[in-house]
Length: 441
Image (tube, rainbow, N blue to C red; front, side, top):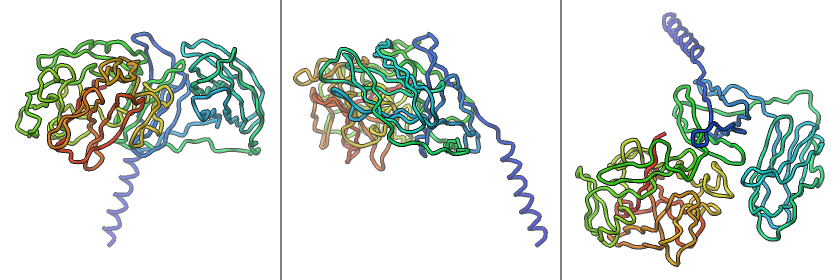
């Protein structure tokens, strides 16, 4: 009995020593626009696996994380500028602002080019305050609040009557903050090995996002350039075809749908036979040259089931995950940001992400695409149940590599909608959709 107790005690001591020897990992962030260094305003880190988030405010660009799973405590002020609702706004809207201690707050409005169109200083007491915002002539602007070196910013869209100038008026105190001798200022943000983190960088009214599951100290570089070929990879030659690339902030996408493999009749299902197979709409080879091939999900994944695999994409590229599509949607939508909870729901989502991803021509009745970020989403239709083709010029569908058991997620753009559909089909084995590849980080 004594020997057993001694053994248990020894194991306990070894566990304590092992935990004590675990070191921190550091996540360091920087940013560029094309190749020019960018000074970020802030970085938000969101844990997509188990929830929680934290924010770094410039000049703090390093997050120190305990490898045992807990971030080092960080001070937070409680200073918060809330998004107005609804957004877009007509003539006037109310915005709430929390300030934990009395002080001077600078309110600044900038247009989409970063030009200051309004600025005002106001001294506020501790508490939650209501502000009345009147938009000017800009269809979109950014309202920033500065307090003791910290910044909070929101994006505001405007429709309706154009005013000569925008302005921010004080509407009153909603609730006060009781005085306290001391208030704990720590964030409950947990990171465990294999957790997927979403990093969002903010600079000058723009945002850029990327995903990773860090296992060691790493440096991440946000890209704030867009509408340009991917840096260092303007084109990709793969299986006898040349694809253009497009940089959309920190993501690098193929600009065209994938067209690789051997065409088989639409009435045939694809099989795990070592040969990449594809369908061409209405069994016409010209459809594959114009819209890319249509693939069943298992074929796309090369009969793997792990999200983010290369699949049938070129080396160094992969089939994007559901979360990576969410980053794209948030990056191109003018109302809902990267990381907004709206992207998590199934069904039609977003404000104008769909319109901004679609080509300006080729859709039924010319559609409503703006192709604002040069993604060039095409209405290639799909091969549906029983081998029936449908939807060409009316819609485009793209696979993700993520599964909502037992079916994978996909995305759809419709000819007249400005939204993006997020869904997962039934009868997985029969549906064939388009593929867009994303470059590995």
